[in-house]
Length: 349
Image (cartoon, rainbow, N blue to C red; front, side):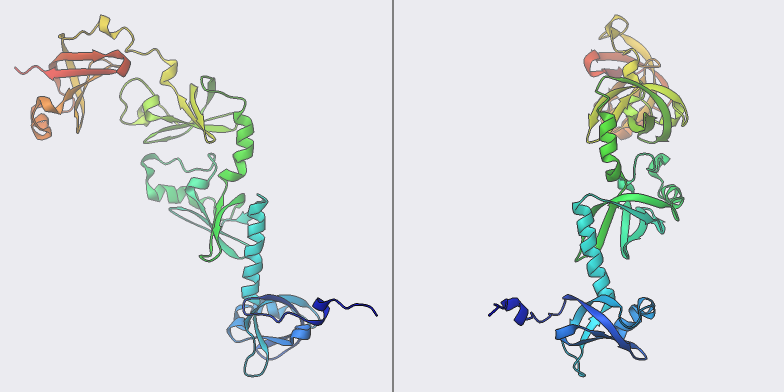
């Protein structure tokens, strides 16, 4: 006699939350019945029917669908089902597979806010943060003005983008996407051609309060404000413009990011500075800026010194004695070329 496998006799009953497959066998005014085989008959009605009405409208008898069990037996003996919940479960499982396989997802951007772009994947709302945009699409806004950033992001609404799943939380229904992650492999391959110390030529693609972005060979690097010039810079846009062609030196490559320098290609004005400026010299300088440490004093176009706040007793007293753009006589207290530092003392008349 042929042995019958135990699993062919005993069918595991469904539980609340299970996703099961059923065949449409009929419909009522506001409900649809599914044949669940040995498990019985399922019904989609009430709120579940209303939420899935557009999908249910296209179903015919004999069509097979997946549904989620929400109640094992209602008053009429049917297993209550949810088509919408099943769709979400299947979508989340599909998203988990896509993330595991590092697959690209194609989406259409549906909205924007100050933090990034809004879209959806398989019916699941998703968010693409500004920080996860590719360098080419990152909003380069002077001063980080939130309204200007939003305006820059709104141009993507309606566009299709290829992204990767950066992070998701099924319980919180949080889905974060990344454009930058999609390009990481390609960027890594291009970066292998470069090393710290290389000289590259490119175009300034954006000027912001903390520096400027420069595009070269499909890459984009940051020239920090401190690397634009040897002189102290308050506003990068005063010395560099968007669209300007420049040469820069690669000073660091880390985590797929390139740091560039313009001043590294210029002669360091602090080299041999002691030939012109020595401790004890009396010089004339122009006050350019106050900060908590003291007053910055312009000695030449490329050299600035610091008159420490302690020379005045308090910052309030310092700002009473000195004024921005005012020219005064100072005594050099020390010169440290390696630190690009000159300490000054006001010569009071």
